[in-house]
Image (spheres, rainbow, N blue to C red):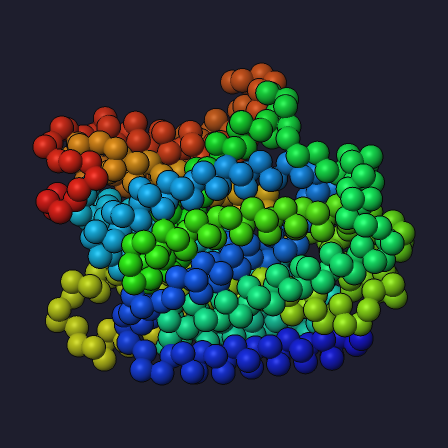
Length: 496
């Protein structure tokens, strides 16, 4: 199929998103944009959040990484399941008790305004970098596989994609993306299943026979037992747990969808259903990766990492796979692209408006003025996305999932420390000093990471660097704090 026809399907899919956005954004207000009027259906939120959690990075990078790390990524996913339990039964009750619009308002009430702004700032940094890294990966694949042959420059492609996301989230926000994410997750998972089926047919293997071949080539190893390795199973399990707590439970993008659900019980069901589905879906992505590495040599595809999946479907092996599968792959790929971008753009707008500009407490702003400011912030976030995508294009990292998780260890660590300190202790911090502690922790972690061989010899710190980062932040907050009479889980008594 020609690139022009494939690009037509991309535009048709986007037109469908605009129709959904138009219908769901009717009568939308600021509350609709930020928290969906707290009336979202928990089943839709749970299903749609699968797409947000996975993104184009999971769709492309997780299968691609099987060639070097086998199935060991599943160790992280098992740890994430434990993290979702903590989110459901520790964090969500706090957020619902306080009726929060921004989860960082908890830090403001418990620790102080500078703590709230620090938490929000780290979220903005983390989510902006992470979301644009995911967005860049998919845009770059579309560019190399389709748009280069149409002589469309990369910056034009990136501008069009970012503008698409901006258009369908501009009015409805969370109220819209609950529905668009459901559509997109359905398309992505359907594409995943069809690609697995096509590769099994192409290899003429059953599921059992393919697993035997993967094992013989060392592609299906699930657990690493080397204690010194950064992929040791216990390290990855703990890292996965705290990655989920930090990147979901302490992330405004993820939690604003959860707190848009009417009741706490429904929000908890949402989280646990999402966790169970994630286990199954990620394992299927790993299985797909094993199939790709079995299939690629049979059709002369010499690609690894992030490039193997698109190369098998759209590259030299295209003659052995159906034209229909090319369309399925492209639709599934952009379906993986949009959920990670629309939610991030909306959440960053929410955090900037609520936590940085203090919109909730600006009673002198009229409804029209609030809406105008929200629109301006939303547009500014879109421009920031475009700039960061351009930087990632310049950097050209070969494996985006490794980069994203590494960056998360540095940027989410202070959030982990801040929330843990607020929940687990009864101490009052010197609020003005909190930003300095939060900045110092990732700097110390960076120095530790760069000097691992000197400090630890053959022992390697991997993604558990996030835990170390959070602990350093927690310890720093303890040093600048004094005891107070406050029940850890209750923040009804505001702490100034």
